[in-house]
Amino acid sequence: MDRDADHLRVLAICHYVLAALTAFSAIPFWPGFALSGLTLRMLRAAVPPEVPHDLIEQLVRTIFWSLFLLTLLHASIVAYIGWCLARRKRRLLSLVFSGFNLLMVPLGTILGVFTLVVLLRPSVKKLFTAPGTAG
Image 1 (cartoon, rainbow, N blue to C red):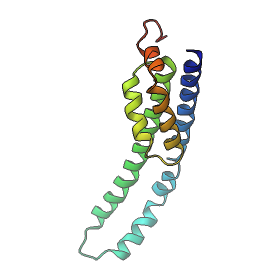
Image 2: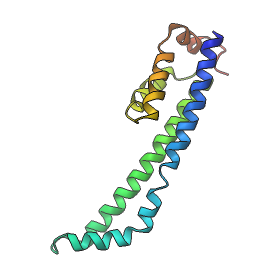
Image 3: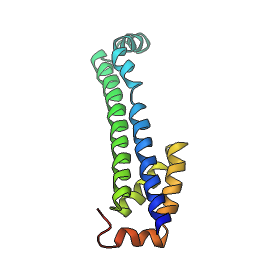
């Protein structure tokens, strides 16, 4: 049981680290916001004149904001999964989101595989269902 608790503790820390790295990966979107005027001028030169320029401007800004917010949302969920693992709560949610982490190559894939391996152990499942362990 101590081995399983140690593995859950390490996985929680790794989730916090991955959440921080994911949040920092949203930083490159800020120059996109700052340079959106230049980007829009370049797009206007490349797009036929019959396309409304306001539409292009809204599209570019929507793409930048969407990517930025989705990245922060993903970082928040990864941090929440780390919190759940540390407190031995929401095992099913952790399993499901570990599957999504597999798509985040390479760090998310590694963390997702190890999380799935640990959470699928019968002894770890007992830790999540035992009363008084979610403290």
